[in-house]
Length: 141
Image (cartoon, rainbow, N blue to C red; front, side, top):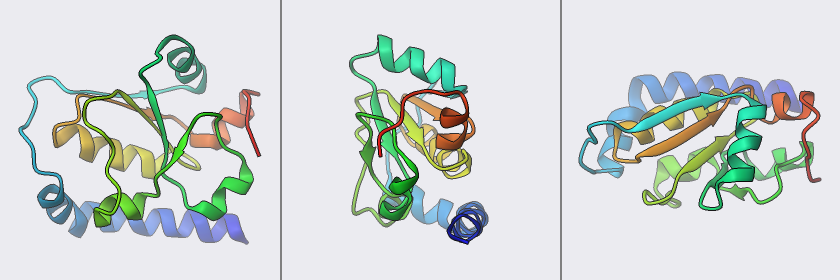
């Protein structure tokens, strides 16, 4: 039931982001458009390679606090999507970022938004923490 509610909320947020929140969020994240920002969706294996090879990579988990019970990637920072949209939390622009959510939808939407608003290096974990766990990669509880 929790998973259904979480997926429903994710879908609503994606629709809401696409229709109404993008202009508001763009005002919240002013910045010069970059010529060639990097936004890339990566598989769990590619993400693991980035984590292992990039000391400067910031892992941002955009799920809600209650979703962490399903597991999280060691070293990740909880920054719920809604807090970012509201402006109460803001990912740093100067660091490369790997975005993580439950199944990849929220992190994809946020990654696209960030890359269009001045974040130069943003990665989206394809399939989210679910795909990470299916790939048998390490998870903390």
